[in-house]
Image 1: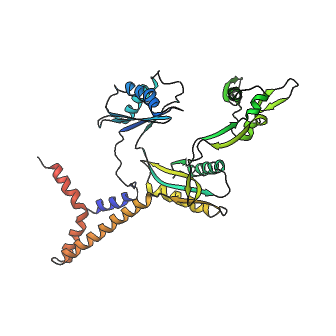
Image 2: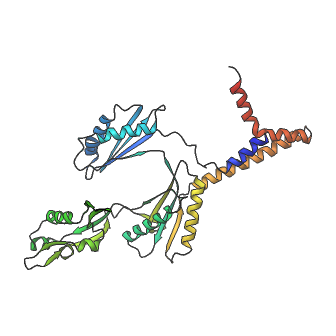
Length: 361
């Protein structure tokens, strides 16, 4: 009995703390982006082909396809006796074999649902920063957090698609006898990043890449679009205005009336909710101590506090129940009998269950 209690107390510090018990994974999600498509187009071009391709998968229980603007989300549920990894591999093979997707469709993204759960969110607010600068600050803090091995997953949210938009006045198009499509083609043909091959030597091999991606508004504006007969160069910034912005200005997050970026911290099934939260809290407190006035990290939507409160309630109810049971026994028996009965209460349920399991039915 003492050994069981000692092992139990020792194991408590190594158990993962969760809001709910971890269930066996049974769902796989396939996300497919179809730019510019309506829900009807997504249903016909994305959902129907994926449903047909996965009909014969083993242990398939249910298929659900959610057709939205610009995206289709296909969820497949596995029967209980199936293996989730084999189920995922079968889905990947089936999706990769689809040949009749529309040309504009991007590569499908296949993920197993239920592998991660949210722990906490951290909002980043900063005065006098543009949206692009706030996004860069959020990416910086994301990378900083991921350097801590106790923080497994960090995602940035609060922004729509980041874009470099080229705004061309009609006068510039007429002046240089160009169309919008001409400028788009000239820009796309040069602002690229591609591997070009391998240079082999006697001692080493070198990978050669063409790197001209132009990832900032200034770099894209410096791109040469035309060459004049006199040997001059006309750059994109000479005939157009390049803006660093986001696709939808109306998609944003505010905290206390101020624009904010949000870091979503999640965990895998092997991680402990409280340990992850404590690491995030220590990081936030350390950064807030050195940040300038007007810039702050704020913890929001904390799931870990609920887990901690439930564990405290469980321990409180446990020792209070043990104390009340001991006092009730002490009213009728001597202290030695009361002590051993109270000490046996934690082991009684396990003993009874073992006896039932070993008895013949």
